[in-house]
Length: 409
Ligand code: ARG
Image 1 (tube, protein in one colour):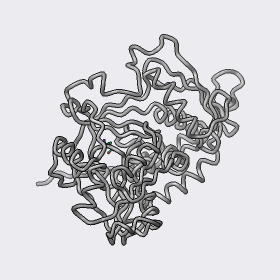
Image 2: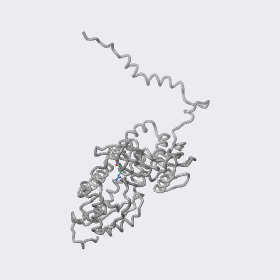
Image 3: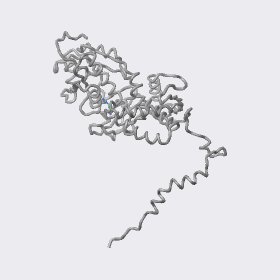
Image 4: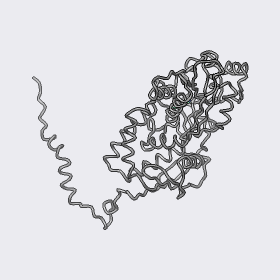
């Protein structure tokens, strides 16, 4: 590939968003570290035009700029396994940012191979989870690559960066600075910093972007019938949809109904508690629906065992261990179990809530004859008596074996 005219010997692949930080990094890596910079911008469903970002990277001084729309892969290989695990970190966060990072790292590693780069670089700070996720994932895929993280001990303020950029003709679009740090992809929007740093303060309305305030949501509920095939959502209200479109539709409709707002104090991997706001309408709706269908189609044993795996899976994702043998094994466990998770779930969206209103499945384990209290009941009531005796037998034995407490002296 080209770029040799710069006279530099080494190449680095920089994860590039097109923002001020990573634009300054393009130059910084050239000037301070003598690298030719290849930028990689990964489209995971966040707003912004990939081609424009690519052009900006080239205008900024990159020797090559790649922009990949990775939505399909992200949905199929990252979101689906996470949905199978009903993954919610600390019971609440559907992991959008956390799921995107290993894919970005993988594409960076692949780009490094294509361009003969010896290093990869990112613009994460030293306080967050994202640096850990990107670096652990990259090292798992190619332990030989050098990793450069200049923002980890960055000395430049925003003003310094703007000055630095202007001096080097780096295009800067100075927009009104948002107090928030935001990361978005199709599985959700993460928002932190600014007024959110005080956990007592209610998030200001401008912290939210994807969802309406539930109080302003329509007075009339909307019902969505979601069909799943082997644990994968395949259609909404009878209309077959690819995963990317299906998720987009639920984000939009859910957002209109104020569904998917999450406000939590969470534990970062680096030991800090932080206050985060998430908006994830599709993730919340799909996890709720998927769980309901699992309750209808899976056995009691599988469900209880799966709960343990689900928590582990969420933790592995959050903590940057996506490319670990345990995560791969959990996905294969789920792939087997999901074979029966086929059917329809009716979800009612109303004023900020997504409530399952009905479930049905060709693989349903719900047996009306067994469940009913009316005269068509076929449950063997007499069998209950013997069952209770044997079920409680160990406790009877335990109780009888109790010896009177011996008093000392
Ligand atoms: N706390 C979330 C996580 O660790 C979101 C991080 C958001 N990243 C960002 N650069 N704003 O996954």
